[in-house]
Image 1 (spheres, helix red, strand yellow):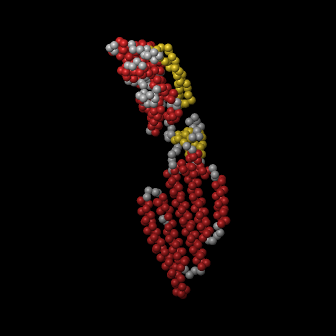
Image 2: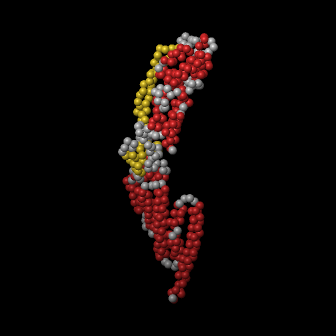
Length: 461
């Protein structure tokens, strides 16, 4: 009691400092967390809530440590003991901060890992890296607090980092690529992808180093994740159903063969036209239009052009030019329409000499026969994606064959594409849309674009 009576200021002053420090720091803590709670409610970022949760309870210990440090600072202890006590309190504070930082980083990594569907192994690696960094920083801070030289430790840490970087020089790029893939989920399991290097197939598994792709022909291929990031690739989305039978693209070339038949007037034109083969009618209508699609207005057939320009019968020429080739599914029907229109016109002329008006010498109508040669190509389509890819690089001759020649000259009634889409893929709606395309209202490139747009729209739905 005598010692307390003599030394009471040495006890009361630190005690008052502790109490005053606790009151002030706890009040400031309360005000700070009220502001943090309001801020967290206003923002949509979950990290605010995690920060509050990770620091709410440890912050009480921080308030006690700061108050105790104030008490030590105003105490009458010797400088040696004050230094030791201060260092001890700073040690407690640093360790507490490190534990809170580890807790916060673990929650953030788990949150973003679930959001971006990061593989579990990648999450474990990220957690270990984050903890290692925090532990290293905390350890260096503690060594500095206690006055331990850190130069050698820093050098050792740098060497360890370099060794790890060299040993993980292949794994780290793939890990970072995995994080990128998960941050921008433009590739997911079940997608059908095609890389610029040629690999293609369905994504079956996405690991933290490689992605496994099941190839269309069977078998698997592992692609490093960094290659997926660095390469240009096409993502077709979900796999499409395969056709019962693949579509095999054909091509055609044709040769012109003179028949030796020629007409000098309308009567001869009608009489010869009745007996010529379908290949002659086809040449002077469809192939003629294909070869002269640069003319404006585009001629409907060569007969109309000859009647208008050579025979100088503008009325009949306009009537022949008005014939819509798309209305006829066979060459025989188109031939009958041409013949009947010419004969009707001849029956209506008033002066006989008009019906027998001859073409100038050397300008008779020469009947030409188209001899087609059908060739197979290397292009095959098993589904709509492959169908689109082939359409992009298909020759105009092959496109013309499947849209025009098979439907009209071969008497199939509809184009090859619509037949395959409906019969082998079951795509009735798409087949009907393709069948409704009027090939005479498009250029061949316009038809190609229309086909690609219709098919891509169906793929995306």
